[in-house]
Picture: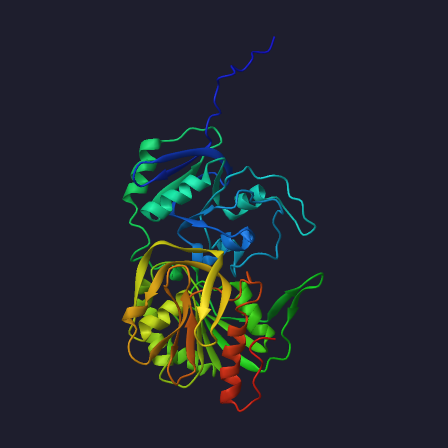
Length: 401
């Protein structure tokens, strides 16, 4: 006769999230086995988990999803954001409330668990993500180790030591870890339902994108507006960029401490600003531009990660719902004369955009390509293209189509 499991038996945890203060959170493991040390943040988006986990700006982070059901629509080869999936630039860990179910969507290629394994992302499910989110809101984003062992055997003392010893993201340049290895030309245009992605065959302008961890959809939107986009590594010099004769220069998003990346990025941007070439920055690119203009950045308490953030554009007086993903922010009080604040978060008043007075130079903190509004912020790409068209004496596009 088979031995019965006692009714009071508890399930042995197969995954742990060990915080730097020694807090241990037990759950069920999925995705890759092993462990990763990183900063824990929370993301409030209801959709887009695959885009979130492949966003290079999440390098060095473990993402806690506040929406309880993640994975229901599976994964596919189209909804990724990093340029080179083999390099696995993006989040190193993920935390879910509910267990991942089998996918139910006509676009699904694989289930989330299988995809996480392939990406090397260590994940944990079955915990109270509301409590973890509340902890982060109260104490800030903690350093932690996430670990998955199917047999449930862990060296807890070692995990605690690793979590406590990790120095965190301050002073850490992660852009160099996720940037392109060499220059390349991007031609893919935005996705169309039941058609897929298009290709830019007859570009009308040339944009050089400095890749600090760029997302694919940013490049698609630029290509969709007529740009040939040349993507260059983060440490590419100004002389090499200018030799490409760009009509515009884009400063991309990316992970890590902007001041650390700024050691090599700021001098390049300052040289580029000596020209009259239009410049547009997003996220880390926004922070890099602010530093190049004499501003400062600071680490945030809990960061902004989600797709429901209201931002006001002072240039139009309109409010848009945007996607955010940043743990550092530009200090608005540090901006020198001649640099105007154009966008501000209506959640906490933090800076979300700047422009250089009288010059074709601007940037935003949020992600206008992510389409949570769904297209509230797409006008920013037309604004950039219009700076190029204006310089060339061409007819301007309507900012809002």
